[in-house]
Length: 368
Image (cartoon, rainbow, N blue to C red):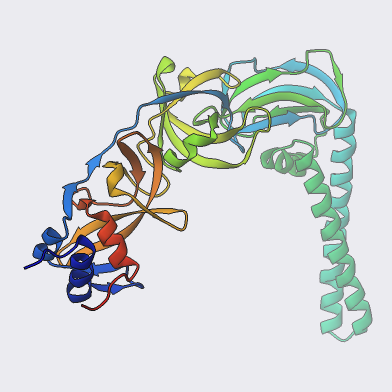
């Protein structure tokens, strides 16, 4: 009996045994048919990429750095905190003497007196209106005057708060009517003093910077990574600073490229060992590359890869045949490649007979 050509055998087997479903990318084939077509499989193996060190700068996260400014113009009479000192929220940082504070307090007390007067007038007119002694228009005028006085008092109270007086200070002023020109500038949050910008005896204007304070845990790293690393790094990937025993994870991957260096900025949050770092410090950040944007990384023979319309695929063995699985090629070597794809780790992929499987996938076949 004459020996059939390889192409004829392939055509007959495919037309008889393979069912191609383009939507599901599933190829139905038995083990015997796969053997006759020369298809061989091998288990996927994990690939631990080497660690890469890149330059990074330590920065303070947004919202953790604040500049304390002067609410009013005045004279610095005493500094109560120094650089590198830890302070608590509400703790006095500096004492300021300001004539403008006296004016603000006087305006508040005048508004307070006016509000009390209008409240008494409103109560009186309400009583007279209920007794039918005065007209409704007079009663409404009295109520409107009270509303205006209340608004003016609230405005004056807010001005005192903006001037740096606490709620307790305002309440004390309201009850005792004791004016003062001295105000304590307090820390807005639990923080560390990074910089003191004024000295005792110095005159400052409204909004002049006095202190720079910041929360130093956690910290951020701004890492300059080359473009070819982006396929191996994603949000959540681990980052370490070995020289300072610090560690954290990637928060975001930049969407723009630095024109000069062709690098992308990765932002990482340091949650372990942040106290050993300093804001503005340049360090070496190490990326392990064990977490990618599309899944874990695997080492596969180049023969297992097939390409279609610029994309790479492997054929994953299933109980009924093979599943076409798109992959991302991270690094391609002479004999094997590192790919990124979401797999469990116990799958087997086709490493021989890939051409036949690709033909089945694309609908190749015919009749005898």
